Image (cartoon, rainbow, N blue to C red; front, top):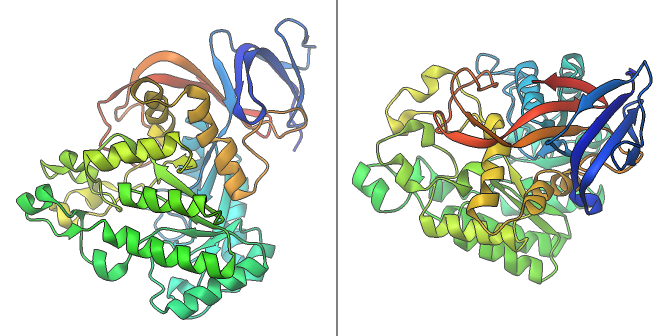
Length: 429
């Protein structure tokens, strides 16, 4: 669907993919970047929609490597429509949906259903990971080629175990033949079973069953060995520990085809935050120690960790109202992906261009999609934000259908003012 031309004027263009950080005007025609000039050169005609970006920062739309949208199967928690709209209001123009929906994304019909619902919403783009094994049961390989043809950008078994290592190796080898990346959420099921918190002093004091770091690192070790043998490209998602980050660092030094991400909340919270049985902080993998948090930041700074994601997991109110161990894990995180990441520019050694790169160009590259860059001819998925605006996350300002976040009441600096998807202005405050 064609849209009217859009002229964005007087903004600070920050596009790490093209090493641009300068004042600029952008002209968008037919959903793509048509021209980039110094302010004042481009002129709008009567058919052109003009956005004044004076004192605002223009970046590529954010690309979120992991966001559970709950549809199909759990529409009482959220829907593709509700979360795609929330994403666009938060500058996120692409969401990647894991395959653990109901039904599982293990056949083309489910892929097509999700794509159709996302297209009908006409907000943020939704890309899909197909199941690595049929039904995510870890017993038989999925129809990988059919899933690829249906538009899946990669394969994953989410956090469902593939207990037979021979089946996992065959799955990796088969994925490699189709040049499909496998997306791993590292978890040794036997080590993490029934756990709900980091295996440390705080979990012991609270009487909570712990999840040891080894649940993550044992799984990563197995994956890295199989990557070395099969040559498959692997993305290790949601790292939580210093040891895991060091394993990825060594793998990269050995030239293994691996990438990694971390969820934004792991960079700001630790096991200390569950000390009052705050179920909003019940996440998997669990919040770990301050040492782990600092190691994750270091790994992000030295590019061991490639991307920051939301790990969005919306829940209804009841899901978080039982005793801590019985609550469902996860944070509604679309609303905090950009503000938590921007906070790192003040609290860590990461620069703003480094942070934006890990939210745009690199996740787009991992997903192998046309996004994350504002070069001429590229698709006009754009986030425009005020780097200096102070605001508070509360039940009124949160855009997701779900409100399960430990960041309610937090004050942030940096707020999205406009979002364009495919050249169409979908949000403007």
